[in-house]
Amino acid sequence: MFSYRHAFHAGNHADVLKHAVFVHILDHYNRKDAAYWVIDTHAGAGLYDLRSEWALKNGEFADGLDRLLGADLMPPLIERYLEEVEHFNPDGIANFYPGSPWLALRALRPQDRLRLFEMHPSEAEVLRRNLQSQGRGALRQTTIYEADGFEGLKSQLPPTPRRGVVIIDPSYEDKKDYRKTLQSIDDGLKRFATGCFIVWYPLVQRREVQEMLRSLERLKTPWLNASLTVRKPARDGFGLHGSGMFVLNPPWTLHAELTRALPWLSEKLKLDDRATFALKQQGN
Image 1: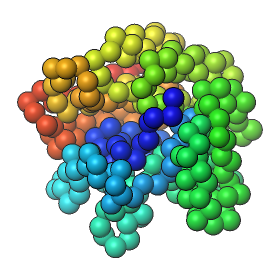
Image 2: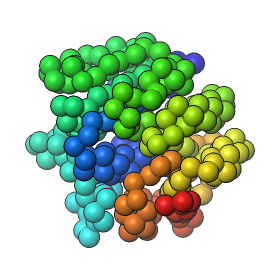
Image 3: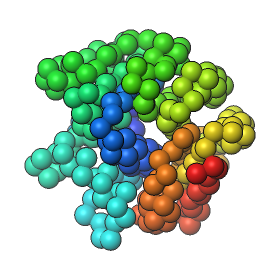
């Protein structure tokens, strides 16, 4: 249950896609003055040191974030994402990588709130320490729950201001996470039909992935599904050959931005000739 630590994967190709989309959604919500909440069901530690032993063990950021740094002719979606990464690296060297909670903290105005769930005891403790270093404003706006985000999400919906973004990004190491994600979306839409629900998913050789996506695509709620494959699946069936973002009630601007960004990302992040991307939407 407690084996997964995101520090091993911080800044990889999946993080690039996830966080580029997330930053765009946050920017969209900031276009209106009305308050909103961000709810993260699997928060992790919030901020990751890419020089740490864990991050360097696999060095996954080398085939993710590092491939984008200094690139030419990058699309606006990626340029905007890298602006946020650069904020946490004022010396110009990409040593620190912001997870979803830190990207959300950067985006929130005084009237907005952040709700973070992290059930890994050690990870939750690091998250608390990291948050304390961000000052009183961040502490006032943020609530951390050392609890199961799938279960805890119910208690947060609908958010008080009736505007909100929910990001659901478990590790999926436990196959039950696919079913729990679907259940969370079903429950969430019943409580908060107008909310923006973001589901990150891995591209791995498991039937549960396709079954979850088929179920999500049958929903009547407007949705967008973007995926990025960076290499052919491994012969042994293990490992991540890509990832995707399924967004319910997406910003109307997101499809056009991804239309420009996905071909560029596919070229920059490809590890072999099987790299590709896909983009679908319904109702927007």
